[in-house]
Image 1 (cartoon, rainbow, N blue to C red):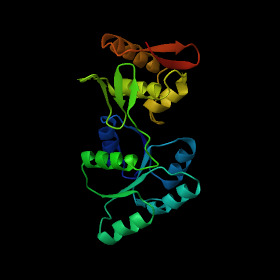
Image 2 (cartoon, one colour):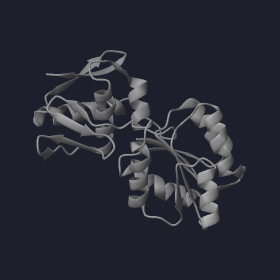
Image 3 (cartoon, rainbow, N blue to C red):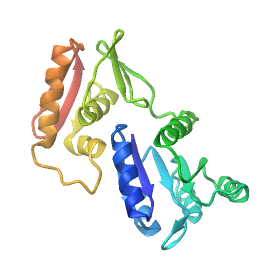
Image 4 (cartoon, rainbow, N blue to C red):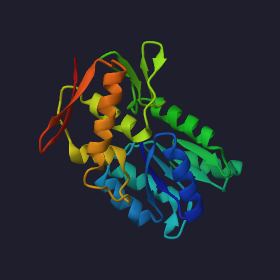
Amino acid sequence: MRLLLIEDEKELAEALSAALSKQGVVIDHAMLLADACELTRQNTYDAILLDRRLPDGEGLTFIPKLRRAGVDTPIIVMTARNEPKERIEGLNGGADDYLGKPFLVDELMARLRAVLRRPPNVVEEKIAVGKMIIDPLNMNVMIGSALLELPRRELLVLIALAKRKDKTVLRSALETAVYNYEEEIQSNALDAHISRLRKRLSESSAGVTVHNIRGVGYLLKEE
């Protein structure tokens, strides 16, 4: 899951990004609406977390701009402005959900799953490949009744490959699925993740293999 966090409180944004990363979420962070507009032009997000009080304007003004641009990404407004009148204002302003600060990360994750289950945004359906059932929304992989435990980035690589089974996934697309735009990516980092993933898939008899398409990317095939 890749999210855009629009929040100007740096400490809160860093803490929230760290907590969500442990849940397998890739976070891009913007402190200004102007930066958020540019990021939505460059990237596709599963959901957007939006604060209201931002240095360059009211966060709710961002929603109609996105909709006019044809972006239907679910938006959760999260703000200290949590009086009933303000919640109604936010929902009427186009927000898919409204979450008052402070909040628990578990509640935020539950609300994210809820908005992603609503049509037409069902983007994280379970994937059956080889002997595995991959659940991108809940970030787990089952082989029969056994849970296959994978480090977060290896799991994100596997999900990206499984969504395009039997098709080559470009290196750049895999890096986008695994890293946020602020992270410095070492030249061999992706290859290291895939090497370890291959070993785990083989040891667990997952019924799939990852093939290197030299100079292009990687491909997941069932055995």
